[in-house]
Length: 181
Ligand code: IMP
Image 1 (spheres, rainbow, N blue to C red):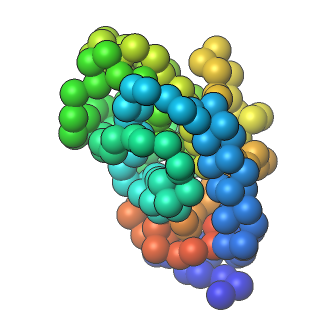
Image 2 (image 1 turned 180 degrees about the vertical axis):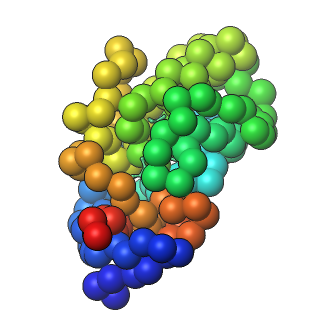
């Protein structure tokens, strides 16, 4: 599909599924190299809802033993970041003493990542690595290192492959960008 309409907004294809899959292959290779032969059990922490599709594609490609947990936060309303991050659910397992790999859909201002890093460390995690499918480098102004970034995009509002506009658009396998009316 070249265009989709979600409520009052129209979106056009931006990143086709094949490109997304290629980028996920590369980030999975990097994780596999870094965690190869690990004797602990790192936890993949899926940040709901946006990273559900990315996490499932990523997990299929990982070749080291890891556990899975999820957690839900919220900072977005419509097409704007509110700046205020709320912890809504989880994490679904203890992170104490664990190496945690946070799996995010997109890093925009970085407010969510900063809050996540603090919360996870306060829970006693031994280490926190950040793995994100997308990064908006022009918007990100925080100090936390983004260890694994699958794709960088300009500052535009996108949907698809897990990402939503007011809860619509998550199911599409390509990524779409908003069409300015
Ligand atoms: P940040 O806290 O500003 O970095 O925003 C991160 C969160 O905002 C992501 O986990 C997404 O849920 C949401 N978000 C940021 N940019 C977009 C976008 O372009 N489309 C849909 N959701 C987005």
